[in-house]
Each structure stands twice: as structure tokens, then as C-alpha cells.
Length: 437
Image (cartoon, rainbow, N blue to C red; front, side, top):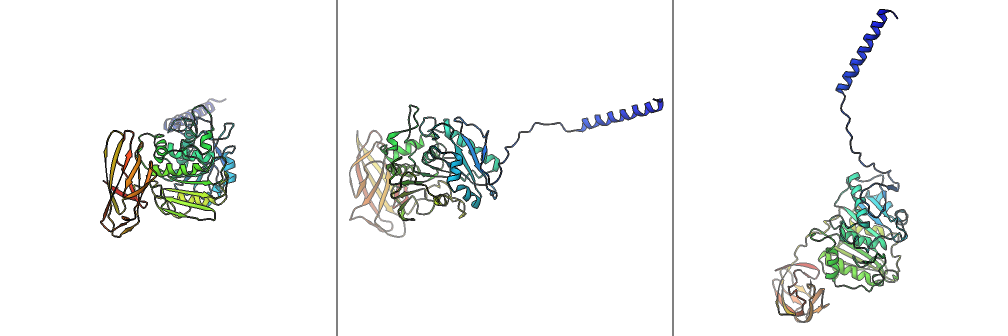
């Protein structure tokens, strides 16, 4: 090699080194960035793994329509015993409805041998306690993060075991769900056991009976101290259900009307389909606080094709506009009630004054209120009272059934008590909330 060629190569090599050094000095420093969860393929049922805390090893299946909306709603569809997420996907119309309306469907799936959801353990019946509800909450959180879903429009529906889980989720996470729909279920806490068993024969047989206040307390105790909005609830049951007996339907109504603070007296009753009886509590429209549909002559398999559209109507996911606030503060109607008690060791006398503050006369009235726990009415005047405890309805007597504008009527009752001698604190007149003082 000639000296001139060597000098040229050495000069070229030096220039390359200088260029490399300059590039290294000016190149940005590599930073490890957290990877966002990858969205699933559209219009395909897809299993999602690693979605978050999952103490009972649930599986998560997700369906996202092609035309998913911006800030989509999320519907959790919970399967029955022996079922699975894919079975719920194939056996219900929620995915097809999602294609039409643009929401996302989450299908939780049990891996334990029974394929039943845990709705009975102490862990399942309290917020953040562990077991299946925690895993389902993680699925929702993952979906909200990944798709920027609307946290004000999270809903849950289920069949049988899934219906029981619907009740449980609304109790454990009232701040997460706007509404639920339960097909052939039981009230929150009805299936509770402490021996590790998944089955509660008394509850299944319809023999677990509580007052509305007692049922409501079970829900409230799942998240102690919570004072925010509570989800709306729709319940369905067949009158011939021999798996989870029909009395559970009435107990669910008692529970959720108490939780929502509305009268057990229906605000509306109709029959939208032959053999169905639909009652609405607290309001008369499609999105009442509580709606209940009894299906005559049908057994445990009460869910059938077409009912999903009625669930969406109740949720407000059917394109008819956004769902209302899940628990708007009751606005006082055209009535006011003043209540006081005079008590002794185990008894009390209560005095109630009902005033019509509206511009029209009230012709026939029913005053609804809930007695504090431990109180039982023994006698009364000015109205008939039924039942004697829990959520009570006072119905006018023959002589005081008409209330002119600004007119008042005074009624009262005597009751036994077990230490709490307070007067009721909330009242409804013919289903409308009254101001209380």
C-alpha cells in the first residue's frame, strides 16, 4: 500500500469516526415508555389477559363493534352457572345490539369447576373484599382506560348466577354502575354463606325474607360510609321458577326500592307483553329508579331473545338519548310532611301532618314512609297502615281522602320500638317525594 493511499484511508476512517461521535452526541436518549394496552380486533369476541387485579382467576372476553362511539358506554354481561363468557356472547343479542348502538360489551367468565360466580362469600359481599367482583371491576377499569369509555355509562346485566352477581356488583360498586338488569336472581346478600359453600338452599327456596330496611342495610353495609348516587335496577322473574323461587322477585323489589329511597307502591303498572306484569317504582317512565317484570307461567329460563332490547331501553343505550343521572336527588313534590314522636321505654306515639302544597286538589292519597329498624305499628288513626313495619303505606280514611290546595290532614300511630324511637325521615305522596320537616 502506498503512503498516499494509506493517508487517504486513515483520513476517511477518521472522518467516519467524527461523524459517528457527532451522531451519538446529538441522538436523543432512549427512554423506556409504558405500553398502552392494545385494543382488541373489532367485531370479534376476544379474550383479554393481564387486565389487572384478578383474585379468583376470571377470564375476560371483550366485544368492540366496528362503529364503536367516542367515549363509549360499557355493558358487562354476566353468565349463568355452567356457562361462560363465550356462551353469554352466543346466547344473547348484546353484541348485535352493540353493533347497532356503538357500546362495548365485557363478558366475564368463571374458571372454577362449578362455573358459578361467587355471590355468597364474605369477600364477595363487600367492596374490594376480593373474589369475583374485584376481577370484574378490573375488567371495567381496563376497558375504560383502553377505549376512553364514559364512566357515567357503565351497566351490568346477568342471568341466574349472573343476575345474582348483578345485584352484588351494584351493592359493592354503586359508584361504578349507572344501572343493572337481573334475570332470575336474588337480592344482594341473600345467598350469603360462611362455610365456603356456593349454594344457599334457603335463599334459593325463597324462604329468606327481610324487611325493606334490612335488605337495604345489607347493600349499604357493602360500602360503609358511601353517600353518593345509587344505580337504578331492573329485575325479571318467572312465576314458575323452581331453581330460584319466585318470592326472591318480591324481595329484590323491597331491597332496591329501599336503597333508592322510593315507595314500594308502584308508580305505574302495565302489561307490555301478554303474560307480563311490569311495575315501576319512584317514576313512571322507561328509566324509573326501579322496574320489575313478572313473567307468568315461565320457569328459571326467563331470559329470551328480544328482552335485551328492553334492557337497553331501561339503561338508555337504545339511541333514545343519554341515560339520566343514575340517582338524581329526589325533588320535592307538591306536598310537605311534618313528623314527630313521643316515646317511652318500649313504645311511642307518632304524629304526622300532611300538607298539599300544590295548586290542585288531591283526591285520594297514599303516604309512603319507612319505619326505623325495630319499630312495629300497633295501632293508628286517620289512615290505614300496612305493613306494620319496614316500608309502610298509610292510605287515607273515607273522611279525609280529599286535600284541597294548602289543606292539611293530621294522622298518627302507636308503635313498639327496640331502642330507636325516631320518626320517619322521608315521605312520598302517591309516589312523589314530599318535603319533610
